[in-house]
Amino acid sequence: MTAPLRLNLGCGRDVRPGYENIDRLPHPGVIVADVEGEGLPFPDGSVDAILARHVMEHVVRFDRALRECWRVLRVGGRLEIAVPYGWYGLENPYHIRVFTKRSVRQILAASNPDGVSTLEIAERWRLASYRVRRKVTPWLRKPRVGFDPWPWIVEAELTFVLEKM
Image (cartoon, rainbow, N blue to C red; front, side, top):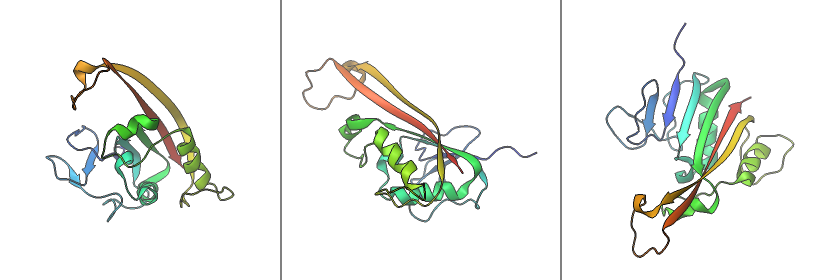
């Protein structure tokens, strides 16, 4: 029996043991690939799980990235996505996408052949889990950018798991 193939997509310097760590920029221990460009260097249906922590909010061609994840996942394989939730995600100037409950519904509606959606996703996904976690961080732990009178920063993270149908 072979070990499950798991991908850590958009890992940056977060190289995790037991995963194939993938990023579009070169780092030690990382496979260089662009999920929305030339694609992932794995055969169709060969991957058991994909972890995408804080990468999808940076993706320009979101439909292409989801399509590529679907291609490499086996049937029943899972794509775990963690992103900033709601408007909290726009504090970072490199984030180009906001995720909310409605965003997840749009992804699922687009993967339903009877659904009407603004996304061009033909691949079938099932929502396996969905969770929003809010936390309050003291300003001493956040990066200082100019004058910021608030002693606390409120953050929220959305984690949802899509399963390939």
